[in-house]
Image 1: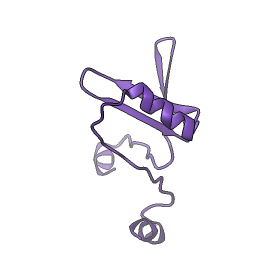
Image 2: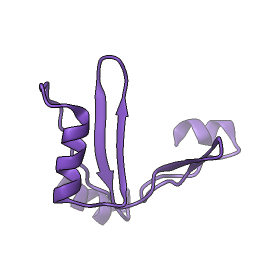
Image 3: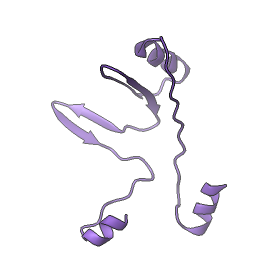
Image 4: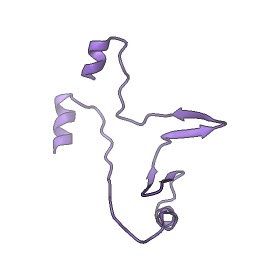
Length: 92
């Protein structure tokens, strides 16, 4: 209902819903990635690991791409451009 109110009032014209799950598990990050991929074979999946944790996910759109050492960022719906005016930029 809050999203509908934001759209109706003009505070937003489009909202991208997402879900976040956090769970400690003995399963390997790769096995979780493969399970998600078998259920939802999105072309934009990711698996990021470090020493103590992992992030696994899928998106309907490309978020970032690394090619030849160059990182390309493709914002998804709902992002907002920054302003060249510092005061306006801070309000954004």
